[in-house]
Image (cartoon, rainbow, N blue to C red; front, top):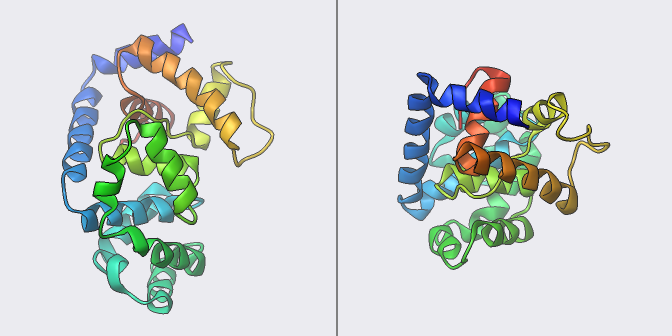
Length: 210
């Protein structure tokens, strides 16, 4: 673990820190915007599951307010035309989740911690698992949950911190086990889990996305 923490600290003393700090600032600012803008970020996280962050960013920009209003069939056609792997399913998830689009900001403020917020999202938003819910929360400024995707798992396996999970999809118990390891790393590195994800993602991919 110490070797990984040392690598993170080296990055904290490099130019990439400025890029990551700017991204964190953008997340905080997005969380202060209205529920419709926050809902569009939820749609982004629904779209990136089993797809790609770059593809999700591109489609989110293209469709924009259509994520709020397009009928399911037209939204599915749009997603298909833009190259999404699962246009029909993702359109269904987005349209189904519109029931909370007008008050999602206020709803999330009702909870006392990020783990409660995540649990509510997983239980109430079709298509949102622990990873996607954590991703969404981090992207709107709630930074105390971990985004555990295959990049992060691969990095932890390479550093002998976990064994390769047998299932690609992590259940709640396994997710919590890996999250606890990431909490220890983040505490020792002096950053929150949301920032840690950006550093680890950069280490594994050479990119800082969202």
